[in-house]
Image (tube, rainbow, N blue to C red):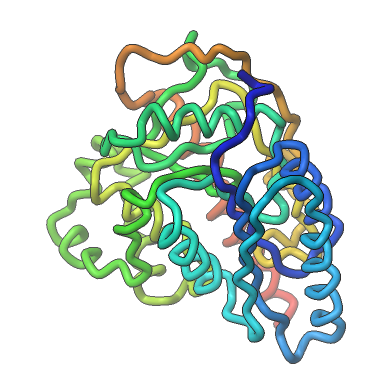
Amino acid sequence: MNNCQLKTPVAFIIFKRPHTTERVFEAIRQAKPPKLFVIADGPRADYDGEAEKCEATRAIIERVDWDCEVLKNYSDINLGCAKRLPSGLDWVFNQVEEAIVLEDDCLPNSTFFPFCQELLERYRDDERIGTIIGQNLQFGRKRTEYSYYFSIYNRCWGWATWRRAWQYFDFDMKLWPEIKERQFLNDILIGDYKAVRYWNQLFQDTYDRHISTVWDYQWTFTCWLRSQLSIVPNVNLVSNIGFGNDATHSKSTKGSFVKKYADMPLEAINFPLKHPPFMIRDLKSDHFMQRTFFDETILTSIKTAIKKMLKRG
């Protein structure tokens, strides 16, 4: 199965990092998708040399040398990550029913592509599933004897979804005031009050545009509104290779968070896939994810903000 022909379109989001783009492009090239959607943001006018970096990054796409329809959605101006990626995916899902999505710093194992393809087909009409993700952040903890398990959390470092799910994406989170007022996060997070406080604050800050550079929190909110689960592989299929000074968000190269999540080892998933005969959220893995990834993310942000304040003082 891992050597089967890839039939699923791939959406590739690029910007200004030819060095990471080239590595991810080579992985896509080995998979040989029949259709490649390329979404690119434009350079920021006040950043010296960024136009040249964008041009060098886009030039990599011209190396497609397999039988492939390449469709490009390149912005002449800088829209920013929060607007560029959702608008690009709107463009993709206006043309196809499903797609595998990779950003320029998300390096996949070769088995990531057939894993997504098989599950996109298997759960194509199952509204209980919103997304298929490539990252496993359990650090070797095997949560199931099957090839994958189910989670309420999604991660966008290598993933796949359907038009049927993406069509409900709402960048403005219009239903957030009602969800907050009726305290529905208590039901979604099953009484995990620390997690409820975390996501209440995160969603409120996103809704108020205090966090203005993201789109993935809105995607999580969208999936939660529809009680949709994510599929998580039992091994890690995607590694984030983009931490560094030229990253949009993950600029730091120091600290425990980066040491844990940057350049995580890749592992192949075995075929044929062992499908679970049930669809139940894995609560233990979700608690681990909340405590180790999300809580540490906000802690890192707070520490960074304090350091900036101290420098100013």
